[in-house]
Length: 270
Image (cartoon, rainbow, N blue to C red; front, top):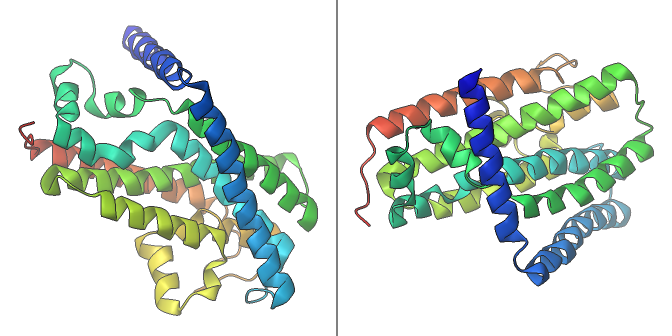
């Protein structure tokens, strides 16, 4: 318990300092408060234009697309708040910031995550909550206790899947020193793979996003159960609860990768 309290106090101190730094320039915060909602509301408007001007996407109409899009934004927003440092591990390796984590008598991964609480990232959750609530209204989502629990578990699982991907990519920087292009590609892949139903992509992409990089479990497969759609690849329809299980598995594997990378870590010499 003493160790837990110590780690909690350190995390709270890190968070307080990070929030103070981010609030130092109010106009910077205001610019994010303006730009992020515009970006995400433009995304949902684009989906409506596509469906209205052309046709539903392989049987998915606008209300169902809004549900998927909002669900994906929720896990994205939480991931941006808690795990954004994993996006920039190459910079930490290059400028020597990661070396400092190795010198302190605390868990390295804990320091990596806790050292930057992205308070501004909470702005990502504002349009996410609004769009998801809008999508739930359009599809007639039933807010039963069981469905609420499932939604919470799906969001947690989605956060872990996203975090596992960026932890793995960040660990690659231990060897390559630079991985910004891979992180950028992963961000684009997650945006496309969670914004649209998976079954609009070729079968090879569907297999990839189901069994190798399981981002289909962030939004698509849970939406199948919540909206009563048909499953893919012979998977059972009731697979919403697979998301937290797969998230935990992916996160555990990423931790193993991270620990292996630490054993082979070589400073950039900066």
